[in-house]
Length: 264
Ligand code: 5RP
Image 1 (cartoon, rainbow, N blue to C red):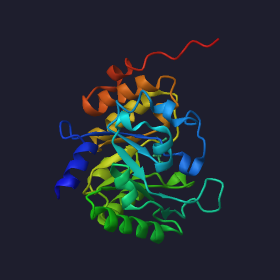
Image 2: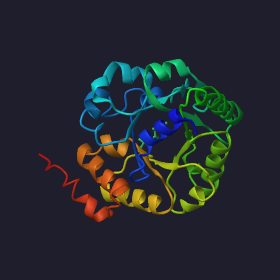
Image 3: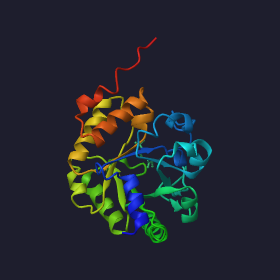
């Protein structure tokens, strides 16, 4: 591995713990103004220092994230369809390596939709991204997206999609948590991070699935809504950091979240 690639991978997955905490705020690229992400700069102002990297589009990065806050950036490079369009899976490769270099990206992220009508084109996008970005020492993170077919989130499907993404050259794979997460990590030759899925109000549930996923081989998380839609985003981020980097027990980490605000 060349020096630039090694250096970027170490920014993403700090060697001190070998684990990673990615904060995802890329949702607007297909969902528009998601709740609590209406003003993304305000949402993440107190969070970027807690996470290892920010998964973000170039538009939000330029418009809303101060460069002085120096987050490690995972730049989303795929997109095109919106949630109200006919085919969410029909993503294209939208960002050039020159742009990623201009934005000092530590990595880029791209979705693949295995098992859909658009699997070949999205896997081709991934392969093209690997060809183009590896040339500059920039790692590609593949997101095993399921579009609207949420029932696909079982380990058999996710292991298949994750393995294909790694075979095509992804340096990191982001996929959904399952109770048998070891079936995914044990057959994927690159680090696997856990994606969040829809928000739950139960902080312990999130901390527990993250603990379990890491114990079953996950390299960390790429979470969004379960942090910035929580009543205490900073507490939630600190608790996750404790579980990911300090090997904390979820019950102990829960102390960092605190009780919900009193209504009325
Ligand atoms: C959207 C994404 C998100 O980064 C990913 O789903 C994580 O966010 P959340 O925890 O809110 O699900 O890739 O396509």
